[in-house]
Length: 296
Image (cartoon, rainbow, N blue to C red):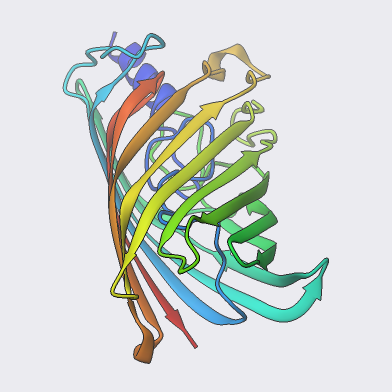
């Protein structure tokens, strides 16, 4: 029974993530790390962005979205993720060409029944190229990147920071400014992940789609306040050895965000909280994220 509980918890809810900010059985990308105006990329320049994210949950849900009542279930993940962004003056199809890369530093801890595991490690690297357009009332962006299995991984159950497989990821989104002064903004960003075979289990995880959205209002030109949210779903079945195949899952969350700009210092701070109000075949919990951005 103990082995069954551990497998249920960690295969369905807490196989370690490469970007590793919260429990995701399928996706490398962690929803909720981008917030207000998530689809808007910055103007040309060099940027260093640091994501500091904590996720915690005490409930693992079944496929019906109800609490599976796993004994003593507790999960906590903290990640610090530095990211370097370069938006160039080079134009392609009228858009600015950019590149960026990140590396996650992750601590994960999971407890269920008599099982307890905690691991700190470096997760999988990610790099992408981007195109961004800035029109009068709209911003558009698209990107193509890849998650690389550079982090240490293992067959589940595990809390290691690497997922153990390559994942190409396409991103596209738009921000609409509802007024001429651009004080009201509505943004949506979609990501699609095409997973490949996992090296430890020889299972190919199902593809995943993630939608992040935000509605915001600018105050005093330097403060944005609003509501943000995300929806993530596994959209195809796993293939490979049946012992490691996991069911399709989905999750949705929403919460408030505040973002403050310091123009003279070229420094930006945003903080958000997201509550997961729907979760199926995965953990249901809370995310707190602090994002710091410096332009050089």
